[in-house]
Structure formats: structure tokens, C-alpha cells
Image (cartoon, rainbow, N blue to C red; front, side, top):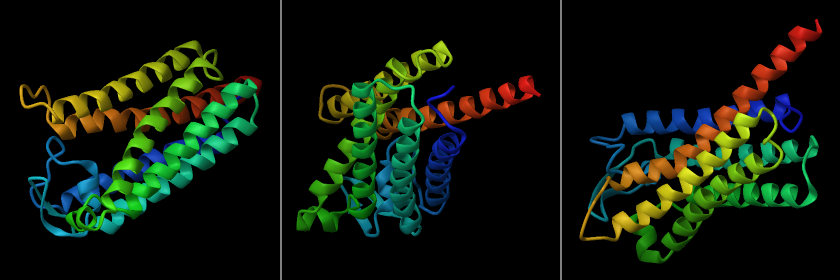
Length: 224
């Protein structure tokens, strides 16, 4: 599995683990937090009160925002190491690294500019919304590009799984926009659609990272 080095694999796994742990810890301190009806970024809001009909009270908002920023840094670092490992066509390499960098910048914006009433009042909420869109779209696109190119033969099922995760994530974002803006029907709560769009990226990181380490471990055992 040449395109994914051990260092890259560890960074992918670490990025996803930090995100999920920070989310769980922050949610545990948030009174009445719901994974179904609350947005993930509600955990990073320092304000206490009502915002868009949701009650916001996240005592550990700094933990979640730090995780957003750190995830972006780790994602970009892992992607840079990955393309340096070789096994990429020039165009695919540029697309993958570009998408990874856009994802990183986007999720860092989410962490720096929380989706709060304060930022809605001062206009900075636009940076939060832009960042969220960048992070979700580009993160899933990165998985698709990797699956269609460098990972399609390493092993083949990994490439197919990468593409599938990216497509599901993008569909989750589309359904979030459709469902949240429709008064006629609600298929799933907003928090569910958002997590479908975001967790596909985390699942891809874990899948690629763990698979790379397992295959390299097997290869080392066979050589021994």
C-alpha cells in the first residue's frame, strides 16, 4: 500500500480519534445535548442561550474548537505526506492535496468562528458557514479522488469503499440542505444528516489508516 505511509496512517487515525473523543467529551458536559437534533458545531459555541431554536450551553467549547483546528492540521499533514509517497498521477495528486487543504482551512474556520448568536449578529457567522461547507465538501471529495486513483488497487475494495464514503457524505450534505429548508417533510433530524456528511470523512480516515497499518504489518511479517 505504497500511497499511504505509516506516518500518514497514524496521522489519519489520530485526526479522527481526536475529533470523536473531543465531540463525546464536549457533548457529555452539554446539558441535554442531542446527537440527532444538535449540530456538531453547537459544541464549540461559547454563548449560553438560544440559537436557531436550539438551546446552547457548551462548557467545554474550547475542547471542541481545539479539536476542529487540530483535525485540520493533521488532515493536511497526512495528505502532504501521502502525496509525497508516490503512486499518484500528477492531476490526481493536485486534486487530492487541494481538496485536503480546502478541508483543513474549512474546519479551522469552523473552530475559530463558532456558529453562535454573537457571530450571527456581527456577521462572522458567514465564515463559520463557509468553513463548514469547505470542510464537508472537500473532505468527501478527497476521499473520492483517493479512491478513484491512488487507492483503487491497494487493495481494490479500499478504493471502492473510499468512493462510496465520499458519495454518501456529499449526499448527506445535500439532504441536510433539502430537509432543513423544507416545511413539507422531515426525513431525518438535522443533526443526523450533518453527521452522515461529516462522519464519512472520519470513517475514511480510520479505514485508510488502519488498513495501511495492518497491511504493512502483514508485509513485514511475511518478509521476516
